[in-house]
Amino acid sequence: MRPFGDATRRNIAAACASFARLPDEAVPSALKRAAVVLALTESGDGGDTAFLLTKRASHLRAHRGQWALPGGRCDAGETPVEAALRELDEELALKLPAEAVLGLLDDYPTRSGYLITPVVVWAVDSAAIIPNPDEVASVHRIALDTIERDEAFDFTAIPESTRRVIRFHHQMSLIHAPTAALIYQFREVLAGRHTRVTDLEQPVFAWK
Image (cartoon, rainbow, N blue to C red):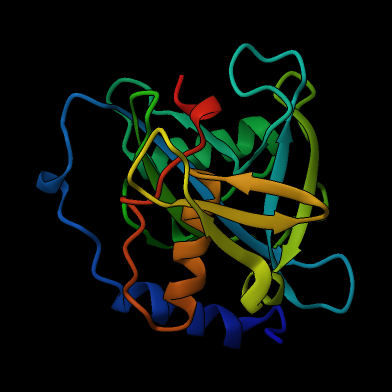
């Protein structure tokens, strides 16, 4: 159990600070930059710490109806942190200052041509979240103990790739990479493990 409060914030910030990200030069430069947010907030029940997960609107052109962390493409001249905070505001009306950022995880290169930077933030006042219907169908608070269970993730093989496909089991749904990979790495960072996820595969339907 991780009660939502200053002690948990300090512990997670320390875990993020001790995590050594892969160097930027180790990834392809031709990919388009994007950022997503692991926004930590109070769970809906019990006062535990949770992160925000959205279901994308059904009318979107790409990845419609899929589970996703808040985020999107970086605008010209924008850093991943700036993009993450902007997207969090645009999607959920959640405005956070730069001081809310606890750390960054490894950049994840996607099959569709993006390099995603995961940004971990502490969202103290999230009671007034308003999902933007143009982008978000629903928003969910996922308690951290959910992703720390042994059965939360599994790995499978597909004939199209030699890499393992990661899957996150959530509410009778299977959530795949990149979202599952980023959540999995965050779980590992919380446990003090420097586990890399860039080699975890996406399902074929997410390659476009």
